[in-house]
Amino acid sequence: MKAKNTWLRDEMPQFIFLVLLVFAGRSSLADHYLVPSGSMEETLQVGDRVVVDKRAHGLRLPFTNIEISNGVGVTRGEVVIFDSPRNGVRLIKRIVAIGGDEVLIRNGHISINGVPLLTQSALEKFGSRQARLNLRDGGGPDLYIERVPDGMLLAVGDHRGNSLDGRMFGLVSEEDIYGRAIAVYYRRGEAFVWKPL
Image (cartoon, rainbow, N blue to C red; front, side, top):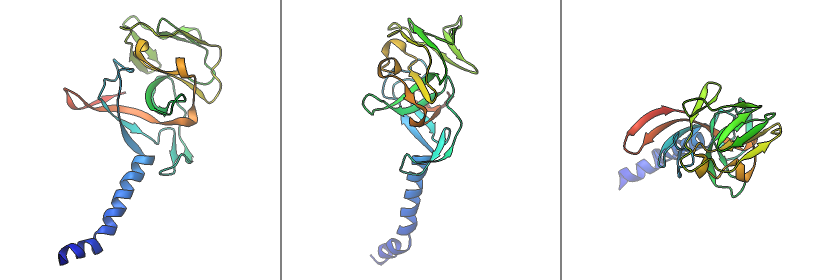
């Protein structure tokens, strides 16, 4: 009993500090995300665990949304985490258009500023990033935006016919992006993996 009291007195403050430090790090620096649906197939599978860099688009004060430093702007093709403007549910989607872009989505295929992104191998190319489309359930709703306003983003799932995304709930503010999904680190049936996004 005496040893327990000594531990509580001597070690408990350091333990509590360590726990708070871990949670502060998850709040501001990096976290993980469990993929709940197939809206990003083929890129992400249901149950995938993804590493999220929360510093990529600005460092926030732990446990708040107060930005204390600017990060780099969101770019086309990034997979990001944000809350749905429709109901606040946390989502993971691909950013397909940024401020200033003209966007056309027809039959699930995207054109940005008049240039189709689809290649011959069913991949969409966003500069150095690419996405393998899943059109097994069709292409979902078509969309035309003459110009995405500055500071706004269009987020769409790779499984176009099975994704509740920006075609339904509209554009997302760049300020509302929590972080960039970096890689899948765990996939059912494969255990621990490292699949960069």
